[in-house]
Length: 211
Image 1 (tube, rainbow, N blue to C red):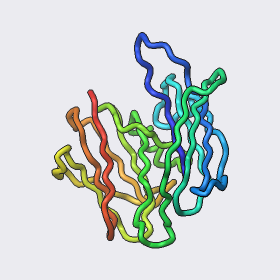
Image 2: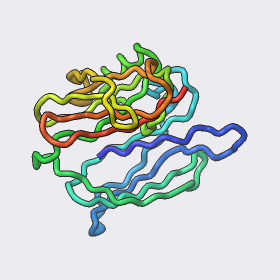
Image 3: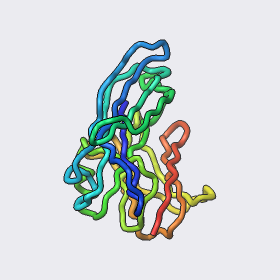
Image 4: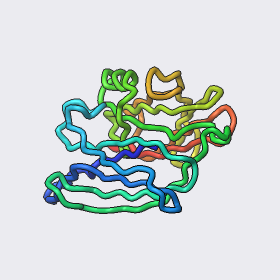
């Protein structure tokens, strides 16, 4: 499992304490501890796909868990110390070895330029974004694992109507397949990426494009 976090964008005129790291605790439904650790914020200079950005960045942490129901407790800690917020949720981890799950959870990376997207495609350690709101000046890189076969992808409008096929290519790093989507040709609005395995149900990724 990989847990990824990002701070909320700054709101003009609103002062709030900056998140410095997230503490993650994972346990089985029976209470057996599986993982305890922290994901500190990355520096702005390490933010893949956000070259030149001075905004605070989030972080990620990966750990091994067995299939089944997982209890996940997350604590957001301030950069200067203290807990800002906590959350507890139940997560169902699929059994990838069963053959019933054709694809992994897709990971989305944002890039400002073609060069940034090319760098992301070569970086298997890049941290994905949790945001689903992007600007028309950005490009999206989506990568995921497929157990077998060749997946396909389409761009849909908010009504679920197909707008275009999106080419899927073998991933260079950090997955088996990936696609790149330039947002500049799209009008501001809501869209859906449909990822279809060769056999099984498709995965839908809804996102919004702003100015």
